[in-house]
Image (tube, rainbow, N blue to C red; front, top):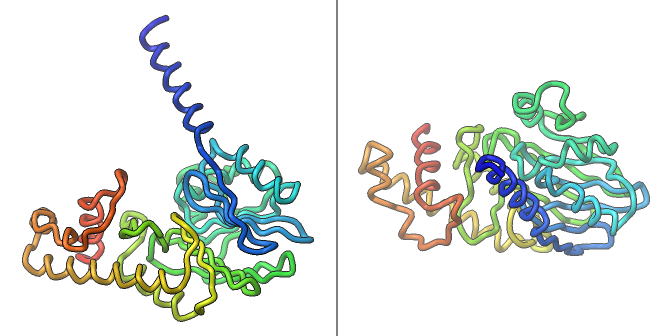
Length: 283
């Protein structure tokens, strides 16, 4: 076996193992609403007399496993898949679900970005897109889908199950104890994110259940703490930016160290500092 073939086999083996190794966990919120935790964005599942629909669908390689977990709650193909934004850990399963018969719904900007990535004829694309709001009447529930501009990205959608008093916030909410990923290259901004979070905070109550894009199910009190944390980070960044004109000078000052927050390998403090700097420098 040649060296190239050996490498190819190892890559394929590791890829398969990574898919198999994912542990899924289903969390029941009500008789009709569930959260599926796996690898990538949290999936909300709504089941009822009309059928099933889901919010976000994680990675393409996990679609078969995800379908099995959904079918365990109610057999059949989800009628709808709602994307909270365009990132691959939330839209990767679009093609598999679309080919199975699901109808994908997302903001107009998600459609544009997925066209750019996959082409105009791709099954990844939303079949229904909207500008500001859209309401889905299904399973005797009114799901209100609202766009928040220039927050995590330029195509964020938040879904509110009005009767159940449950809100799926997508990646506007990283419930991981740290700071969010602001995708500046895709139209996201710190100030837009804070505006969105404050609007959501004003619209919910103490009994509202919040499904974050990443992390455990949450509530209004924890959302308030998250907003305060981001606002503190913003203040520290602006203070440092007033002292140092360049991004490199701000990185040397390391203003976010004061918060003593946890970070991940893919989103270390240095990268968060860079993204916050780039966003706030546009002010």
